[in-house]
Amino acid sequence: MLDLLRRGIKTWVAKALFALLVVSFAVWGIGDVFSGGLSSSVATVGERKIPAERFANALERETRTMAQRFGQPLDREMTQALGIPQRVLAGLAQEATLDEAVGALRVSAPDEAVRDAILADPSFLNASGGFDQAQYRYLLAQSGYSVEAYEALTRRALARDQFVRALTDGAVAPAPLVDALYRHQTELRRVAFLTLGPAEAGEIAAPDEAALAAHHEANAGRFTAPETRDAVFLHVSLEAAGAGFEPDEAELRSMYEARKAEFDRPERRRLFQIVYDDRVAAEAALAQIEGGASFEDLLAERRETRADVDLGFVMRDEVAAATGEAAFALAAPGVAGPVDTGFGQALVEVAEIVPAETTGFEEAREMLAATLRRDHAIDRAPELAGEIEDRRAAGATLEEIAAELSLPLGRATGVAAHGSGAEGFAADRDFLAELFAAEDGEERDFVETAAGEYFVLRVEAVKEAALRPLDEVREEVEADWRAARTVEALETKAEALVTRIEGGEELAAIAAELGLEPGAEGPKARVQGWASLPPALVETIFREEEGGAAFAPAETEEPVVIVAALVSIAPGEASEANAALRQSLERQMNQMAASDALTLFIAAKQAELGVTVNDAVIDAVMTSMPGG
Image 1 (cartoon, helix red, strand yellow):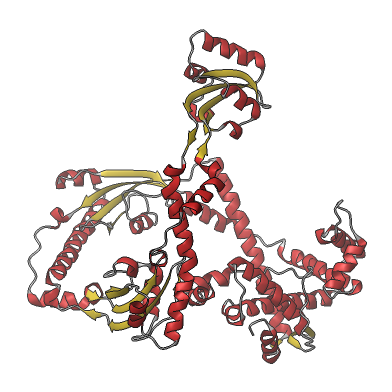
Image 2 (tube, rainbow, N blue to C red; image 1 turned 60 degrees about the vertical axis):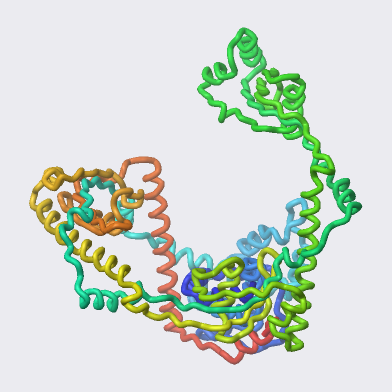
């Protein structure tokens, strides 16, 4: 897991995700206190120092939180790769900056507010929901706080909160900005369009040798053979690990007896249930059934369908007791009731009855044997992998080990990173990852797969990516050249059509002239999904004025260019959904405005106060971490 995280953290996606994480530790919450005995400060903001112990404490909490998210303890390398120390220090520096600002203004939380905050903290409440003085003092002592220190910490946190609210409460996004974003998402547009295909491109002359050579060189990436690798490997599959094992009769019978309940399937019935408000209504409905009406007739009266009242195929104990008793008392399909469901009086239709089934030992034998074979193989696979490791440690080659243990020696030849050329297990994702993580000639460590299998490989050869010779790919190059020239011809024609449309000609008239069938789509918002227009053309159309036109190539196998004319523009519908969207946009933009206000204040205040960081003390804290 950690190996995968180390690889993943190097990708830009992972870095972007971790950059978005906010500092999530509690500023004055209860937590384990780091006891490294550090007395120096990790940073100073103005005259306010950030003690090393406080940084270590917060770092431990944040690291533990991240470890829980990954389901894996984090060592120092991963902690640093995730940027946890930097985020924790930035959060503490922000608190110190706000404390300096609050102190300069002499802002302080009153005793009543401190008391209310502590009394409301669920950590200090007993089972009855009341504040527990003994628990309060015990938890503070366990966390290394005195009552006075903790209350001072709480007072500062409340004062900071009061200051931040005063700073950000008036920050609102400009209404024109919210309006623009709302229009961007909800404005409706309708288009008419033409599809220009190869037939409209005209005759494309055959390319000469110089044209092919130039296209081949200019588009080398399309005609480059990827890097490929050859490898030998040992694959400890479950099949190989379980080879030769057969469970004995006694074991099979014992397993059957232990799991016999699984092979006895009780009777099941397909039930549909209509619930009425009272018994009178239910009995009236039952009288209709007895008079010849069908269950569908009852559903039609209530404007319901069978899907609305379907209970599915159920066993007796899978439905309410009263429903089960009535439904399973019927000897054949029919309607039972009225039944008191607790939510009303119901009629229950038994539509189908599936009799109880019992699977005998002989019928279950093969399934049981397969289960035991798999269990044995799962237990045996790591043992077999260990035997292979012992021989590798003694200097044996994979070939020698395969011969000694009668294991098949796998070979992968000409395999690319995306899997082309791979067959069988060599196409496995984990195998490909190991193959292309290795150096030429390197024998990797054993890898366990998600299926409980193992493998080890050695890279035999690496063939670098190389441009394939023109003679080898001539047909592909010519087809690609012809497609490119076709698109160029279509775009030239499309550009002329756009000029005519913007000059006042109707797209329908142009379509008739060309013998093409025009299409239309909309009115739609830009985010609603346009079936006929490529995304780039949708974006362009939403920048056009009414009467405008545009074109773009379509993402199809054959060369196609779409010409679209903007027919109409309309504001978004005055619907509840759009009203909710605008409110949501306004909230988001107001939150961003408040966040920007706070960020700018912090940056300006830190520039005024000055911030110094003690890297040596931070390194000492990091070294004190587990795995540091």
